[in-house]
Image 1 (cartoon, one colour):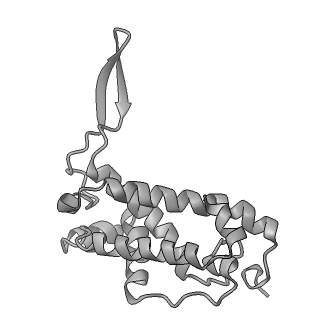
Image 2: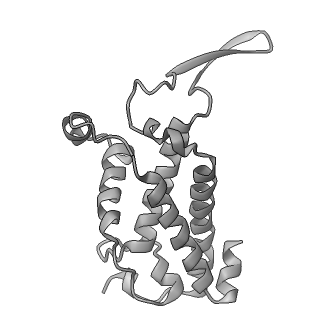
Length: 178
C-alpha cells in the first residue's frame, strides 16, 4: 500500500503545513502583483524584454547581475510555478509518489476530482516552466501556444480553492496556516 493512502500523523501534517502555507502565500502574493492587462508577457520567450544581465554600481564598482527589474514577465513565471504546485496539492492522488503532501491528507476526504482544465495546465506548467523540453519549441512556440491568455481566470479558481480548503479545515488545523 502506498504511503499516500496511509493516515498521516498530526505532527507530519503540522510540519507540512508550513510548506503548504508558503505555496499559498507565494501564489497569492505574486498573483496580487500581476497586471492582468499584460499577461501575454508570460510566454516563455527569450525576447520578452527581461535582460539576461544588467550592470549597476555598488560603492563605485560596476557589478553585473543576472536578472533585470521585477516585471510582470517575471511575476507570471513565479505565480505559475506555485500554481503548478497547488494543482498537484489539490487535485492529485498519485499513489506512485509516496512523498507528496496532498490536500486530502489535511481534510480526511477523498482527493478532489481533477477539473478539466487542471491536467492541461499542469502539463503546460511542466513543459513551459519546470522542464526544458523540445515540445516547448517544437509545439508550443511553433503553434504560438506559449502564452497564458486565461491565466487570470485560472488564478481566481485557484484562489477560491485555497479559501474553500482553509474554510473546511477544523480550527486547530486552520491555525497551522496563519
